[in-house]
Length: 247
Image (cartoon, rainbow, N blue to C red; front, side, top):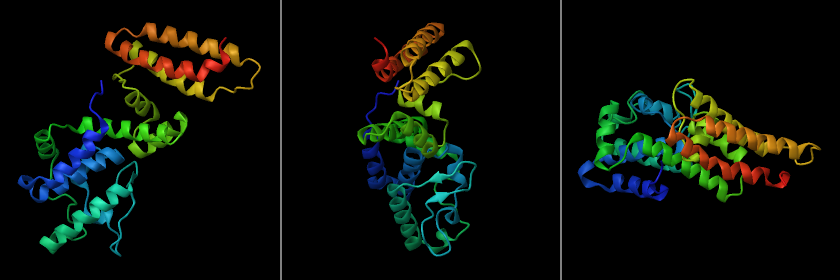
């Protein structure tokens, strides 16, 4: 279960940049971590990024990277970080910023990324999940609906809406098509259904009660104790959405 505060990761990126022992790799590791945190970049995609993927022929930052299957949408934080990183590389050695040059020359493979993240007590998965929590909390603080947060988060983090929901709600999605998986998908689907329930429908109360009954049945069908405990946390979200319709 997620326990590390999101702000810890914001400070972590600053530590990476400021760590003198890392030299130029510190800036690169910070940019990599921010790409994972803010944009959901996959670990295996990082070594494949080149200068031309993020800088156009006029020297401007490309805000939407279309190199991979799902677009990578850069945030303001990333645009600033990458621009500084490329400028510093060019000042040190102009050959490092040719269009076909790797964006992160210090990290040509994922093994080194993992090793250096470990120095700072972090993993790719922790940073990725923290970024999802950050997006979720920002959306709630801005008064956005959960439906909007899940859909926008799906695109920004480059995962499915249900994966986003599961991580944002401190839950897990196990692999395969087991009874547990089907029950978990039913619960996450009920959360979406509850938020879309037409308040003016004549049978809203009946539908709301039916949803709660289905939630209880699905929750009880989860065999894994840890998963069942995790998905119990979805209950207050469904109850809040259905409260106006259940007497």
